Image (tube, rainbow, N blue to C red; front, top):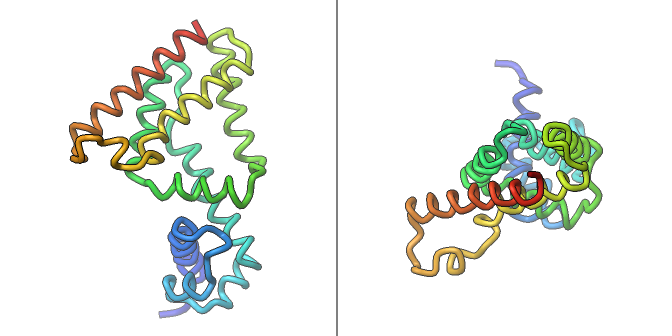
Length: 187
């Protein structure tokens, strides 16, 4: 069996994702990434050039994928926020990676800006609203979708029992809040 460079690169990206989610850019170590990927650390430099460039590659792969994974429908903002919520609950590391990005790379990538601005423009055109208003709406619903994962368990579940029923009730609150925000700011 020969060397599979695509598979090695993919393993490095997956291992780097786990390392960056756990430790951020500053705390991540290429030795741990290489070991987890079952590759040598020279492969990181060969494929990505540096740890910083590897971090950027992980950000682009995971955060850009998020922008495309959850379908955006200008006529169903509650459905969009519910789908985002579901994705964040299923993949909590993506939010942690986004938090590390905000701390260590405060300037968003052009692709990230384009993804958000495009959604705001689509929503503005569909609702006859100003882009600034739809940007506010999107920022608010994005925050709603994230709040479960960014709130400590003892606060989000004051009864002490985290259950599927509690999660379902919170998701319903998120979609109702998105409906209220859209009604108040867009209608």
